[in-house]
Length: 180
Image (cartoon, rainbow, N blue to C red; front, side, top):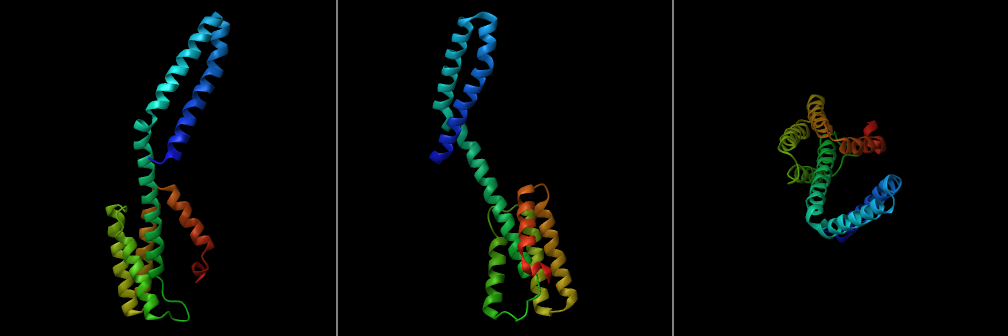
């Protein structure tokens, strides 16, 4: 585990213990004097010290889960952007064959990412096959089908994931190709 995560977790343990003492300390003082106040201080210090010592054991799964979700969100965002870019008709001037094949390769690579859910992989495969057909046919109907398939992927990626939704909104607002 990253020492920074451990340091932040331990700092939060001590801060929450201090807040607990600041709230419960005066109550103990007014209800019973210095004995409950001292017992509370000793009990909180012991509990916090044990939590501090055991933090790596219970903090590691939470950090790993957060990192996994972050990787999945980034992979989802990347696949939507790559597939959507490949599913657009080429802009003027027409890109070279090498540029188009690099775009296609990146779209296929992002669609095969390990952190994607199976549903998104299937939708990305459908969108990529529609985009391949559109590039081969080069008809308005083919491009509409490719764009619709890419939009289904984008909607599925956003569903239940506000982080990816916000990233996609920011990307669309800042992308000059979205105005074509």
